[in-house]
Length: 182
Image (cartoon, rainbow, N blue to C red; front, side, top):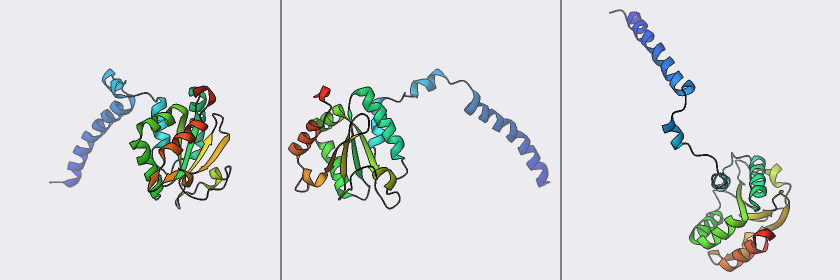
């Protein structure tokens, strides 16, 4: 048995197979079945992407541009939370909103939520240098639809024991909501 002869035979079978797979993946028309599974990007998809975790690989300048565009389109302000996956109070805030659906509804009605990572991997110094200095995490910046700072908010003032105060958070969200949404 000649090994080089077997390779040649299998190689001649691989090329048409590879070509067919390449065509099917990159060149074939998209089927209706495939289109049924592809979802368009919506405002809620954008909001989920911007507010889903503190990813140090995200570009906060691009995220802010997307948030600004969505805020203008939907007549909302921007709710920027600076923190990190390392931050226990950041996770506490996420749980707090999850446990208070009425507060989450109020926030999402009036704000495009955006998270910015502050970590050793990526402290996002350049992006954060345009805002007032942060003393602790998480920290909230509320921006208008054009990206202009309205409020720099320490979350320590919103704490209540081992969680957050529903009354104080609701007051904050109502106070800085766009006037036409109030």
